[in-house]
Image 1 (cartoon, rainbow over the protein chains, first blue to last red):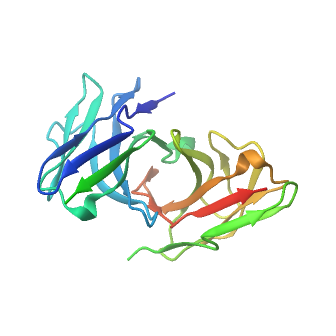
Image 2: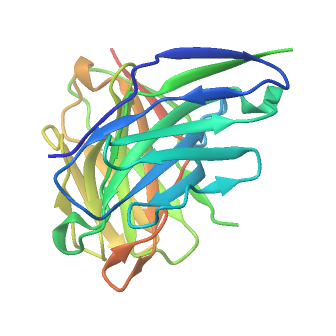
Image 3: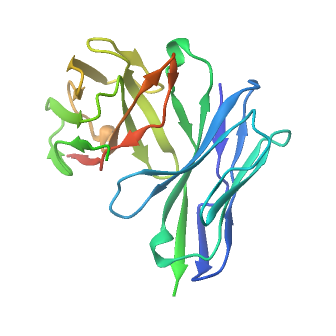
Length: 118
Length: 115
């Protein structure tokens, strides 16, 4: 079974600075998807960024980028030019690329609370 | 915009009560999911459904059941609520394309307290 570990329960950053959230995972599969989800205090979880394991290029979405190290099974999220609206709980998640009865089940990490200081 | 709604934001029930949590999505998604979120444990999958009247157990199905009579609606049922089911419950939905699940969209969550 796959596992996802976020070893940083809490992180903080100054507004306009850069912060990196860590995530490691364990799997025996060679093809899969990785995600970062953001859950603001209002609780609606939204997708921040996704990475397909077969793609070597790291995904980027505006101020958000990932450092995907497949051999090390590491998937960190970098937030540049942090804004107050980035304050949230961030979850790393894994999904197998296999079809069948897995039907896209997500395996989540424990979450990291990010505080942004003005 | 994809919209996933849940019937209640906050719910307080007594031990032994039967509890219904409802989720509705408006994007014609095939897949629907129920997760519970607990501090330090992240989100854990309870049940999911890939079609009307179809359901599959997730990682922690004990004490729960589900119902999907219509494509847009997925209900989570606690047959006899217990205090260890106090948690945040999140519903999600997604397309199923070519046997592969697309991005999941989440509802706002229901904070359930069982006294």
